[in-house]
Length: 111
Image (tube, rainbow, N blue to C red; front, side, top):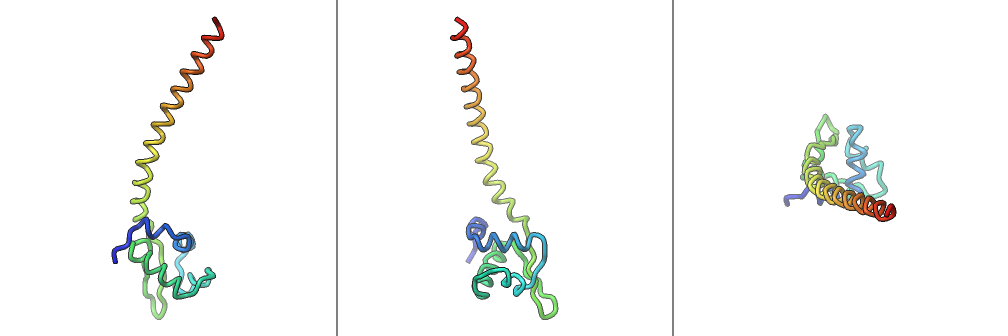
């Protein structure tokens, strides 16, 4: 199944796994030790993150290490950016309107 990047970061456990791996590379067991959910549940979360390209699982000897890959988060950043620009423009127009009303109020009080 093709996973969506937004689907991957929607779950708080997966976001916590990404936060944990942001600063360090850990084995699968090392990741699981940081959570109060079962190891199979952690493995499922890691599988989803891997399918989305947000982490890589790297075999090294008998261990498998998880490493964060944040490049794919640019899809989220791009999506959010379009709405940030939209709201920034709307708030800019609101600021202009409020400033105009403020000036009109000052002028009315002077008369």
